[in-house]
Amino acid sequence: MVNASGGAAPVISAWTAVSPLGLRGADFTAGLGSGRSAGRPLDPEEWSVPFRAASLVPGFHIRQILGRKGTRSMDRATGLAVTAIRHLLTGEREDGEAERLAGVDERTGLALGTSTGSAQSIMDFTRDSLVGDKPFYVDPARF
Image 1 (cartoon, rainbow, N blue to C red):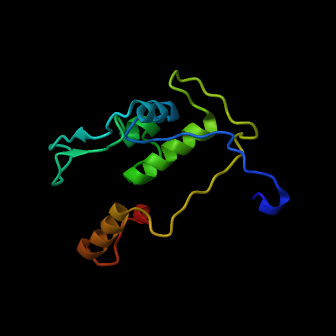
Image 2: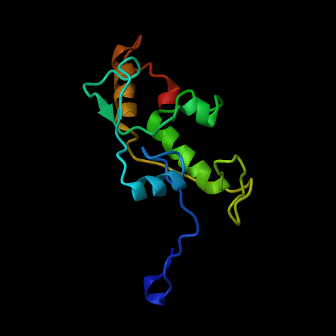
């Protein structure tokens, strides 16, 4: 934490973005600079929603991006956050090369949390609690 009265200003040493403009910070910057729309037509086979277009992250499939290990119960919002944090901490670039941020090593930890989770997670948990064999049998991964 920076003490504002000490005259020191916060310093941004690294940043990234996972957005409908792309999976990397460079995609975000280029997309904003070009003024292009992030909206794309939706595939009705994949998305059962009352809209024809949306601003989705292109090419984002949790298991393809993060791998199968540890992603079974991961919802889309969590996958997006983990992807952004991975890119930020490893300095991972599009060419596959990675250079860790200074001071970040195998012993570095990061805690990211929310008090409620995504709306989809809340709905899935509630549904499981109501339609399961017994109302209190909910998949532990949903916690």
